[in-house]
Length: 132
Image (cartoon, rainbow, N blue to C red; front, top):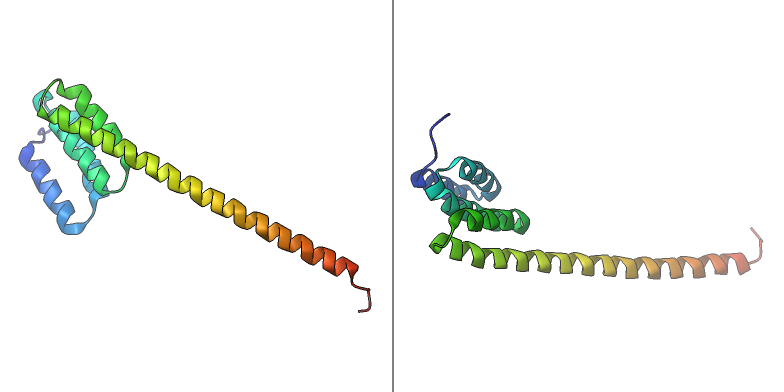
């Protein structure tokens, strides 16, 4: 087995993500490293991975990491922070779902209008004499 990640490794990953804006890659790497971490650091690493997933605008994966932090953390500061972040991630998921639902409702309304307009046009064409 290779070297286990430490806090400095996570600091470097976060620094690179802040510098490049590639939070997806950082979050994926952190998630992977958190799985292999020593038990005493696992909750903190899952928490930090979750924060990167939030920065990457992926609240579902963030929620998964925050849940893992809570499971691994017991009763400590990282667990408390993870629970607060999990609530925020769930709120983000709900908002995302609501915006997608509104987008679908808007699309359905536009399709209904288009269908009405097309029907009126076809009825008008059918009423015109065949003089062409």
